[in-house]
Image (cartoon, rainbow, N blue to C red):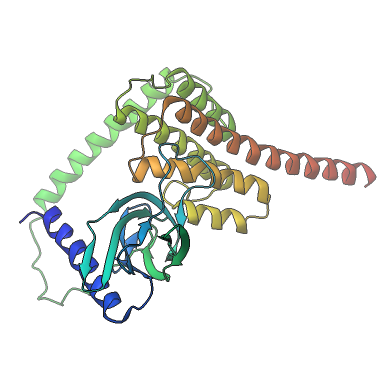
Length: 335
């Protein structure tokens, strides 16, 4: 049996257990929620089972996921998880009780722990609509920055080694001298041929150049999904690289939630600039990790949002640097 088949069987089993547990004592409509994993990874999709127990003759409507635009605000969320897909399962009838169920595909970018739920489900009875809500579940989230080091064990003490012949040592020293002389000659020649000045591109101009190049290479309407993903990831990486170079943050390795936490602790970045970074990174994470494939106009908006986040952070930092320089100039003049 394949892994996909095994996972599908687990989903069916969990839905069946929820349904049996709910049907055993339900007198009115009830809704239950279960996360089909012990722990999840930030940015990796996972499944949530939702079951609704009610009387026959009632119609159950699960929430709908709007199509296509990962940057749309607000998105469909349940707790701190973004909803990617809802797959309704065939209903089951057990005596005087009917059970409707669905598997919700979600993704979270929280750190440490994510709260999943509640899910609101509508139950229609003879024209009257009632809203039934599930409970919530806390699921551990594995961070990409946290790892466990291998324990260090010293090597056992062995018998002393015997002295070897000195001949190989002298041969090795001779070869080393030849290599050192060759390296010195190569270094002198390379230095003489190297340009006298080497331009160093600052973080902000480098980021602007990357965004300009991406704008010239924007994917067309019939571009393959791989090209769309590569373009959005390149824009996201340009923003992350700027934050790493300008603020000396581990922005290339951290998750979006971890970057937001680092910016909140940085006194140089105002809240509006930090919020612009978060709003630019969240939709691009859905493209990078959850396989969301937006249209070309949405791709352009995601790229411009990343560029706007760079502009917001740079404007705040430059204002602070200019104020510090002016204060130093006035202090020097008064002294």
